[in-house]
Length: 145
Image (cartoon, rainbow, N blue to C red):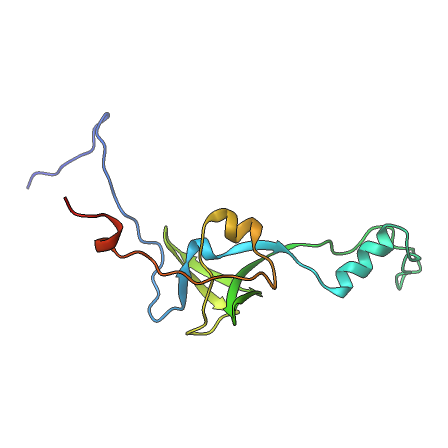
């Protein structure tokens, strides 16, 4: 019964599975990006902090000089609806190198916009117009000699 031991200078390649789920809703990982949360409450707190409105008085009677909650980035995906995109906040689950599980915010069969890092992370916003394109197939992507 010989045992193999690792010795200095040896190397190994391993794939480690930390979690596994079946029947999970997944999308390509590059479809998820972050945007600053925008809502009326966040805008009101920011305006109060900048001095355009009087500071709110807390229940203890002290004036609040700092906003309690600043704009926080939220994870979103962009949905395709009638030629325009609409952002939808999502809650991510587990992921691998290519896909991410979506726990909340999407339902099956919704069209999620995919594209380059710049397009998804910087250029897209609510109401942007998009044009659908077909992914090239392996046969048409590289002509055979």
